[in-house]
Length: 198
Image 1 (cartoon, rainbow, N blue to C red):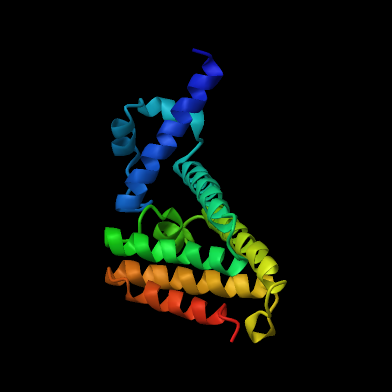
Image 2 (image 1 turned 180 degrees about the horizontal axis):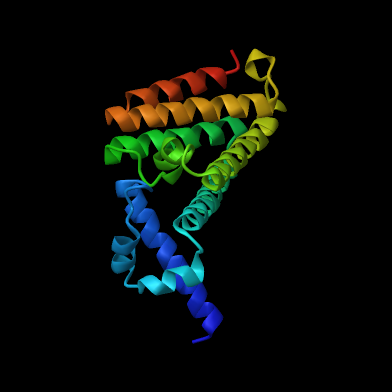
């Protein structure tokens, strides 16, 4: 096997394993020795791929947001639906997933947002970059919607996108705390009202 391919596969395997451990225990609760044993990668090899645990955390977040944004782009570009319907379907999917699973599923951004911001400036930057990309995706959809109907509060697509993102993030954190879908459902109801055109 080509060494570059093998190196990339090992790096991806480490990140995928690390993400699962982080989702269960958080970043500070993730012991490198435990994670490497789970990944079946020698401890010494870790530093061939990442210079530190913090650098690993940055790579985890970059990978997570890259994959999540691909999913969002697919949801927000469904053919045959209005921009409003596509955006609402995205949020409804999040609510449905929570109700089915009973917790926030696979959301590293929600899991680590409060935990690492005061611990690591590079990881905080990675979170902010990911959040900005998500807001931009919402704003793109809302720009299409603005051509179909007026946006509420006299806001620009960027402003309303940020409002939706902040509401959804806060609701997701509260649903994670309470393990109840109520906060997410309330956020969805609010976003539906915002986008209703009334």
